[in-house]
Length: 128
Image 1 (cartoon, rainbow, N blue to C red):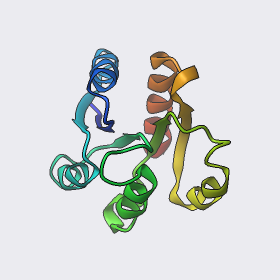
Image 2 (image 1 turned 45 degrees about the vertical axis):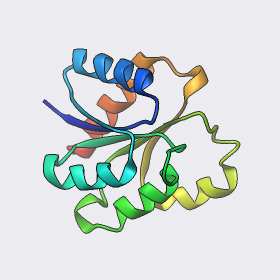
Image 3 (image 1 turned 135 degrees about the horizontal axis):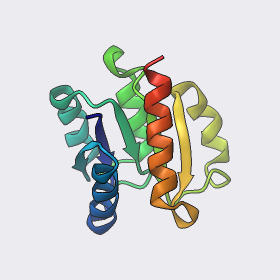
């Protein structure tokens, strides 16, 4: 069962995403605090991260830079699922390219089945 580390500040949305991904055959570990998520990653060894960019203590971009600073997490697939559109993030998005983001989803227009499809695809690609 693939382990998903979900970093999302909204409890209801995290619960819905977690329930959907669990029904899709994934184990989901949820955190709203990015620092706690980094610490959890060392314990649970996730196979993929689903990350919001708007977090309570620091941004998802900062989390991603920190995650990628650890050699063991440099190739871990990351899917961004955020209320920040790619257009809004255009200046920073080029900077994210080297951080190996597997997919980018804009919350207002993304269905949970689309997010799950991206999770499954990224997991397949990472196993090649």
